[in-house]
Amino acid sequence: MEIFKTKASLQAYLQEARSTGQKIALIPTMGALHEGHLSLLNYAKPISDIRVCSIFVNPTQFNDPKDLEKYPRPIENDIRLLESVDCDILFLPSVDEMYPDKNEVWHLDLGELDQIWEGEKRPGHFQGVTQVVYKLFTLVQPDIACFGQKDFQQVMVIKRMIAMKDLAIQLAICPIIRDQDGLALSSRNARLSEAGKRTALALSRSLQYVKDHIHDAIPLAEIKDKALQILTDTDGLSVEYFALCESSTLKEVDHIDFSKQHVALVTAWVEGVRLIDNMILNNLSN
Ligand code: PAF
Image 1 (tube, rainbow, N blue to C red):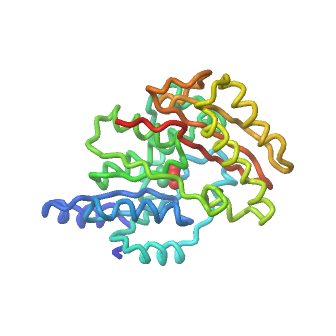
Image 2 (image 1 turned 90 degrees about the vertical axis):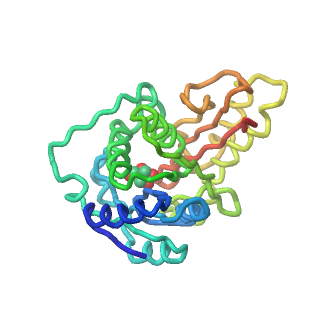
Image 3 (image 1 turned 45 degrees about the horizontal axis):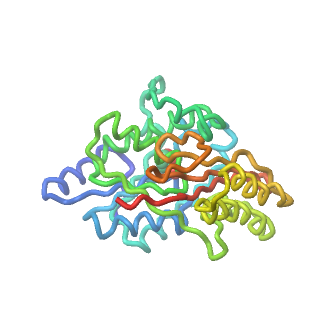
C-alpha cells in the first residue's frame, strides 16, 4: 500500500493511473477503522482498479473541541487493517495540508437536511462534512465514492451535494455491519462496557420492531410508540430521537407510502456514549 501525506504526491500518482483508464474508488474515513470500514473497501474491490482510503480527523465537522481531541487515532493499527484488505492507497494528510487557508469559508445550502436530526443536534456538522468531502472529491476525482449507511443522514447530504455540484461520481451506500447480536459497528462501541453493549442492543431491536410491523393493519403512530417503548423501558439508555422518515428528505411521516423508501432513525445515549443507528423499512424494487 502506498501512503501519501500531500495532495501533490497523491494527485501525481492518480493522474498517471487515470491516464491508463483505471477506475478509482474513494473511501473517506476518520480512521479508528473497524469491520464496517473494511466492508466499504471490500465492496469497492471488484468495481474499481484503485482504492484510495483517506484517514483524516476533520476538525471542521466537530462542534465540541473536546470530542475532536478525544477522537481515537490508532494509525498503526489502521494501516495494518488497510493492508489486510489490500488497500492500494492511504491518503493521510495533516490539518494544514487540508486547510492551508485558515480563513476559508464554506457554505452549502442543504436546506432542511442540515437542520433536522443530526443537523439540529450538531449545528455546522454537515457543513464541515461536505467541506472536507468536497475537497477529497476534487482532489481524488473518484469514479465511485463509498459511504456507510450507518451515517444515513450524512449519506443523504453527500447525495444532495453530488447533485447540487453536478459531480460525475457514483455514490455507493454500503450496508450497516452489525455484530452477531445486532449492534451496529461503530468506533464508539469501544467505549462501552459489555453490559453497555447489551443495553445498546435496544437500538437495533426498536428499529427491527418497526420494520417487522409496517405491513400490519395498525396506525404507524402505534407501531412507533411500541418501538419507542423498547428504548424507554431499557435501563441505562436515554433516547435523543426516534423517527420514521421518508429516506431522501428525512421528513417524518405518519404513514408509509410504499412507492417511496422509508427509514427509521434512532439516536440514544448509553454509558455517556452517543450511539446512532437506522434501518431501511421498505426496499423499493426498481
Ligand atoms: O463518516 C466519516 O467518517 C466522516 O464524516 C467523513 C465522511 C470521513 C468526513 O470526514
